[in-house]
Image (cartoon, rainbow, N blue to C red; front, side, top):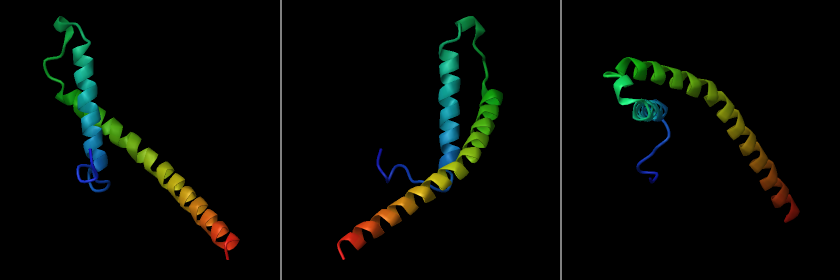
Length: 86
């Protein structure tokens, strides 16, 4: 996968959630006895997608905070290095 294939922003999180849920549903069906497998899994997929989106929404502020912290650390480290050589 390259940057051209995967771009952060827009509906990336939604597509990730959908892909995650489809894969999870496929695995559940795969490891369930054949006579107990569901004929239709659409309702369950919608529920899983909604749950995954909520999970991602709660994670985003944490990731933003971590990114800001790393940016600040980089800024201070860069300034320290510049001051050492000037």
